[in-house]
Image 1 (spheres, rainbow, N blue to C red):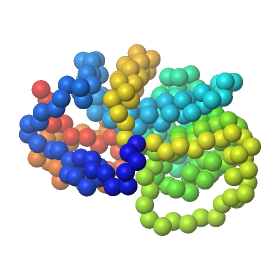
Image 2: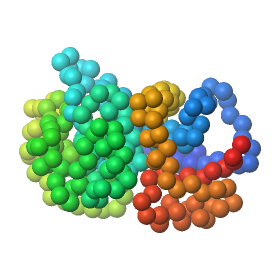
Image 3: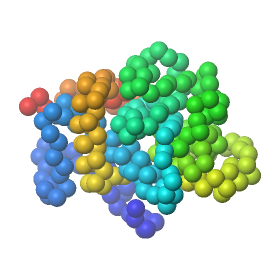
Length: 258
C-alpha cells in the first residue's frame, strides 16, 4: 500500500525475483505451515489474495453497525475464485459462483462440494443471478475480465462491498449505465475496493483457513492441485503447462520430494 508512484519489489516491479538453489531469509518473514498442510501449502500464496480482500471487506463494513453479510457472489471459478468460495463458506455465507464454462466439470464440482452454488454465465447472466439468488452483500471479482466489474457493481446489494482482484491490461471499452450505477452506490452505501499483495497477517489467516478446510472439507484442497511439473530443470514444460493445459486449476513445480 505504498504511496510512491514508482516502487521496487522483487518479482513484482522493477526488480527481478528470486529463483536460486539456496536462499536465506529472516525468521520474521517466514510463516510456519503445519505438517498436515505440507502437500497443499503451495496454495497459501493465492489464498492470501482472498484473505486480504475478504478481511478488508469486513473491516470496511464495520462502519455499519447493522451489517450482517449473508449472501456472497464470486465472479470467476479459477484458482482465486475457488479459494474465495472456500473462505466465504468457512465464514458461513451463502455463496454463488459465476463462471463461463457450463457444468458439470471439475471446478463446478468443487464449488458444489462446498455447499455453494455454481452458475454458468452462458445460461444465467450475473444480473439475472443477482435477482434470483441475491442481493449480494459481498462480491469477490476474480475473472480477469474488466466488463465483469461493471456487471458486478450492478449486482451488489445495499451496504455491499465489491472486492476487485483482477489485474487487467489493454484498452477494452464498454458502455455502462453510469448514472444508475453511481446513484445506487451513493444511496445504497456501497463500496468497491481493490486488493493486491498480502502481508504476513494474511498468510497467517490463510494457514488457519486451510487448516479449517482440511477438517471441514477433507481432501478438497488437494483436488485443486491439477498439474504438477517435476523439477526446476523442466521450467519450459512448466511454462507451457501454465499457458496451454486444459482444465488446469493449479499448475506448480515440485522442487523436491524431500
